Image 1 (cartoon, rainbow, N blue to C red):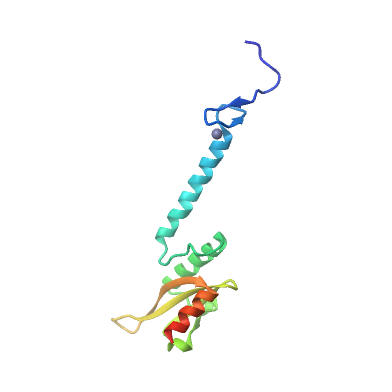
Image 2: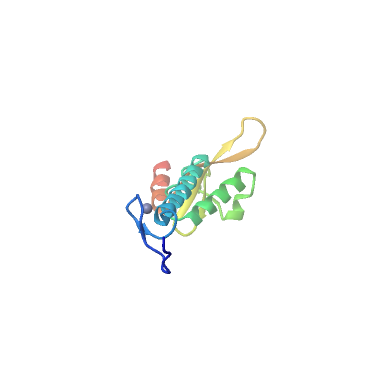
Length: 135
Ligand SMILES: [Zn+2]
Protein backbone atom coordinates (compact mmCIF):
# COMPACT_ATOMS: atom_id res chain seq x y z
CA UNK A 1 0.00 0.00 0.00
CA UNK A 2 1.30 3.41 -0.87
CA UNK A 3 1.71 5.73 2.08
CA UNK A 4 0.22 9.11 1.70
CA UNK A 5 2.00 12.17 3.01
CA UNK A 6 -1.15 13.54 4.54
CA UNK A 7 -2.96 11.93 7.48
CA UNK A 8 -6.29 10.55 6.48
CA UNK A 9 -9.42 11.44 8.34
CA UNK A 10 -11.22 8.33 9.46
CA UNK A 11 -14.81 7.51 10.04
CA UNK A 12 -14.91 5.79 13.42
CA UNK A 13 -17.53 3.21 14.37
CA UNK A 14 -19.13 5.73 16.76
CA UNK A 15 -19.90 8.05 13.87
CA UNK A 16 -17.29 10.70 14.66
CA UNK A 17 -14.67 11.68 12.14
CA UNK A 18 -11.09 12.17 13.20
CA UNK A 19 -7.47 11.12 13.07
CA UNK A 20 -5.59 8.37 14.83
CA UNK A 21 -6.12 4.88 16.15
CA UNK A 22 -9.22 5.66 18.16
CA UNK A 23 -11.87 8.37 18.39
CA UNK A 24 -10.48 11.22 20.48
CA UNK A 25 -13.89 12.86 20.76
CA UNK A 26 -15.30 9.79 22.50
CA UNK A 27 -12.16 9.29 24.57
CA UNK A 28 -12.40 12.86 25.82
CA UNK A 29 -16.12 12.52 26.57
CA UNK A 30 -15.42 9.31 28.46
CA UNK A 31 -12.67 10.99 30.46
CA UNK A 32 -14.94 13.88 31.40
CA UNK A 33 -17.79 11.55 32.34
CA UNK A 34 -15.41 9.57 34.55
CA UNK A 35 -14.12 12.74 36.25
CA UNK A 36 -17.70 13.86 36.85
CA UNK A 37 -18.63 10.47 38.27
CA UNK A 38 -15.70 10.61 40.69
CA UNK A 39 -16.56 14.19 41.67
CA UNK A 40 -20.23 13.26 42.25
CA UNK A 41 -19.21 10.26 44.36
CA UNK A 42 -17.33 12.55 46.77
CA UNK A 43 -20.61 14.19 47.81
CA UNK A 44 -21.75 10.93 49.37
CA UNK A 45 -19.07 11.37 52.04
CA UNK A 46 -20.11 14.87 53.07
CA UNK A 47 -21.99 15.20 56.36
CA UNK A 48 -24.42 17.60 54.69
CA UNK A 49 -25.47 18.00 51.08
CA UNK A 50 -23.12 20.36 49.27
CA UNK A 51 -24.52 19.81 45.81
CA UNK A 52 -26.43 23.09 46.00
CA UNK A 53 -23.17 25.03 45.79
CA UNK A 54 -22.64 26.68 42.42
CA UNK A 55 -18.93 26.07 42.01
CA UNK A 56 -16.34 23.46 42.95
CA UNK A 57 -14.26 26.08 44.78
CA UNK A 58 -17.19 26.60 47.21
CA UNK A 59 -17.49 22.87 47.69
CA UNK A 60 -13.79 22.58 48.48
CA UNK A 61 -13.95 25.47 50.91
CA UNK A 62 -17.05 24.02 52.57
CA UNK A 63 -15.33 20.64 53.00
CA UNK A 64 -12.30 22.35 54.49
CA UNK A 65 -14.50 24.17 57.04
CA UNK A 66 -16.54 21.06 57.88
CA UNK A 67 -13.43 19.03 58.44
CA UNK A 68 -11.75 21.71 60.55
CA UNK A 69 -14.83 22.21 62.73
CA UNK A 70 -15.18 18.46 63.19
CA UNK A 71 -11.59 18.35 64.38
CA UNK A 72 -12.36 21.04 66.91
CA UNK A 73 -11.23 24.22 65.17
CA UNK A 74 -12.54 27.48 66.56
CA UNK A 75 -15.58 28.59 64.52
CA UNK A 76 -14.38 32.19 64.88
CA UNK A 77 -11.46 31.34 62.59
CA UNK A 78 -14.06 31.09 59.84
CA UNK A 79 -16.07 34.16 60.92
CA UNK A 80 -18.72 31.91 62.43
CA UNK A 81 -21.41 33.61 64.45
CA UNK A 82 -23.93 32.27 66.91
CA UNK A 83 -27.44 33.30 66.01
CA UNK A 84 -28.95 35.20 68.90
CA UNK A 85 -32.40 34.81 67.40
CA UNK A 86 -32.13 31.03 67.85
CA UNK A 87 -31.11 31.31 71.47
CA UNK A 88 -27.52 30.69 70.41
CA UNK A 89 -28.42 27.14 69.46
CA UNK A 90 -27.38 27.64 65.87
CA UNK A 91 -24.22 28.96 64.34
CA UNK A 92 -23.60 30.20 60.85
CA UNK A 93 -20.35 30.22 58.94
CA UNK A 94 -20.23 32.32 55.77
CA UNK A 95 -19.13 30.72 52.54
CA UNK A 96 -18.47 33.60 50.23
CA UNK A 97 -21.01 36.37 50.14
CA UNK A 98 -24.12 34.39 49.33
CA UNK A 99 -23.73 31.01 51.00
CA UNK A 100 -23.83 29.79 54.58
CA UNK A 101 -23.09 26.63 56.47
CA UNK A 102 -25.41 26.17 59.37
CA UNK A 103 -24.38 24.28 62.49
CA UNK A 104 -26.34 23.18 65.51
CA UNK A 105 -24.84 23.28 68.96
CA UNK A 106 -25.04 19.98 70.73
CA UNK A 107 -24.16 19.42 74.33
CA UNK A 108 -22.42 16.12 74.61
CA UNK A 109 -24.12 13.92 77.16
CA UNK A 110 -20.83 13.17 78.88
CA UNK A 111 -18.77 16.06 80.12
CA UNK A 112 -19.20 19.65 79.16
CA UNK A 113 -17.92 19.41 75.65
CA UNK A 114 -20.13 21.14 73.14
CA UNK A 115 -19.92 20.05 69.59
CA UNK A 116 -21.04 21.71 66.42
CA UNK A 117 -23.10 19.50 64.18
CA UNK A 118 -23.48 20.57 60.56
CA UNK A 119 -27.15 21.05 59.68
CA UNK A 120 -27.18 22.29 56.14
CA UNK A 121 -25.46 24.35 53.55
CA UNK A 122 -27.62 26.84 51.77
CA UNK A 123 -27.90 30.15 50.03
CA UNK A 124 -28.24 33.29 52.07
CA UNK A 125 -31.88 33.45 51.05
CA UNK A 126 -32.78 29.89 52.03
CA UNK A 127 -30.88 30.39 55.22
CA UNK A 128 -32.93 33.48 56.15
CA UNK A 129 -36.14 31.52 55.58
CA UNK A 130 -34.82 28.68 57.68
CA UNK A 131 -33.87 30.98 60.53
CA UNK A 132 -37.18 32.82 60.49
CA UNK A 133 -38.93 29.48 60.98
CA UNK A 134 -36.77 28.74 64.04
CA UNK A 135 -37.85 31.89 65.80
ZN1 LIG B 1 -16.50 9.01 18.70
